[in-house]
Length: 212
Image (cartoon, rainbow, N blue to C red; front, side, top):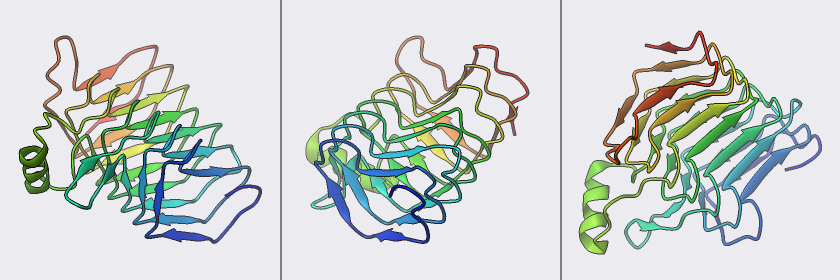
């Protein structure tokens, strides 16, 4: 969705195997809804949101990096599941499942005042589904290859609440690069078990972030 695209709904599609991004919101796109899609095996990011005039989009209920039928199977995008940059703002994410991508689950870079509510990062939507999928496929993890979530580039005012972030290869959440005034609330960050890997890391001159 490109220049000044607005008030569009992309709903209940399979967006898979494309040569660049699965979904791109750029160049002033706003008030669009990306809902209940499967976004998998795209060469670059599953979803890319870019630009200071790109704002107020809703991204909810998507499977990003896994395919639901038959059973849950790995179908990671080539880079991160979601990538945000260029001062995009006031976008709302909720109830997405972001797993098995070949990068971070979510990257928030130079972006502000976005909300992330009840997203699952690093496994299938329910524990029971994860258990069944592992039993059938002998997989150890649906975690993303990088961090569960990386907040960088001076990003500020973002809120993560009610999320579940688990089993990502390089850790749960990293706030770095001068990111500030972000809030993480009522979120479970667990089972990042590789040696030297943290659940939450705040570094790189980041300050005034709140863990609530």
